[in-house]
Image (cartoon, rainbow, N blue to C red):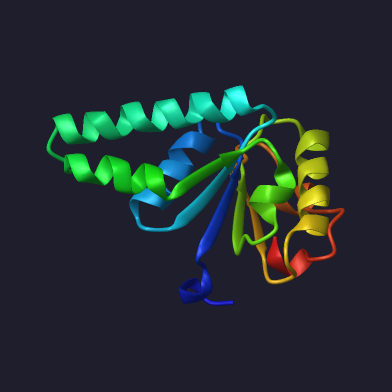
Length: 140
């Protein structure tokens, strides 16, 4: 898979880092699937993205039409299967808990197509440890 092949991005975790990652990919034109453990958390992440984009408009960094365009490229769900089944590239942005991150990667390994690259936004864990239980070590 090359960079040009990446069309669908999945972001796991709509919190502090995840919503910003989703926003940047959507702003750049990618289709993004944003996941969190509850629809309320997904909705909160979407609201933070909307607020951030409004700040862009207020500071002449984006036009008003870009808010709707960007938001239209983000699809939120509390169902991991929904966000992972067509993803080309997944970024995990859940809390810094190694067993949780490993479980997310284990589930994604089963859900995502074989081509999918799994990445982490970790600040404290080794990616090789996070992806230790997957069958795609070459795509971690």
